[in-house]
Length: 184
Image (cartoon, rainbow, N blue to C red; front, side, top):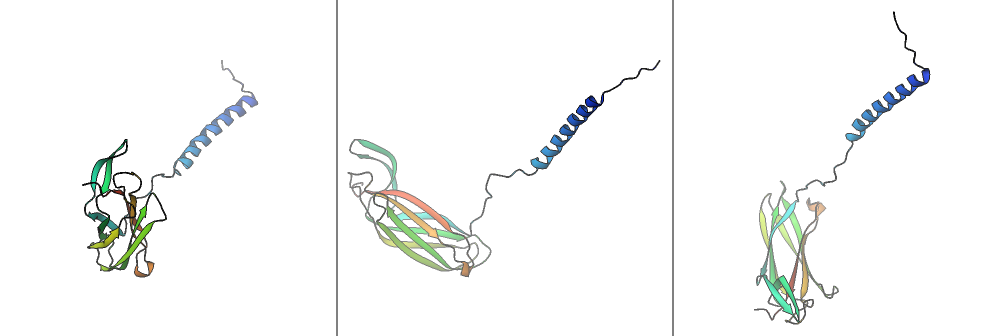
């Protein structure tokens, strides 16, 4: 004999609703799963790259004592007058003209004390490098073996965008150092 199973309409409707929610959730995860954003920024190759920065006299890393405080690994300049030179490279496939380079030295103890010098590279071929030197830079403070903050400086070397000559990106490098003429 055959048996008949009767399903009430409400159970059939509840089952269909559960099945529809399951299908929609799977479909929703697939739709929104493909819309994930990447929070890691894209690596952008600079148009101009600062390959190296050199100081004359050379900066040395030393442990210094000021009063009872000992500071480890301070980048120290032992002269109050120095020269900074940088090697820059054209990373593009086009010739760059009138590349503006600016150096700014700021006293970290008194930020109103600032020294700025500017220069230009007339022409730089693709992949070529150029050395730019800024001479006769005077320190804006001196620790003189007594103050850890009096001789602190921040030097910023920047290559500004020059859209009329084809350069659209800014490039910048910063160096924090301490001037202390008592260090030998």
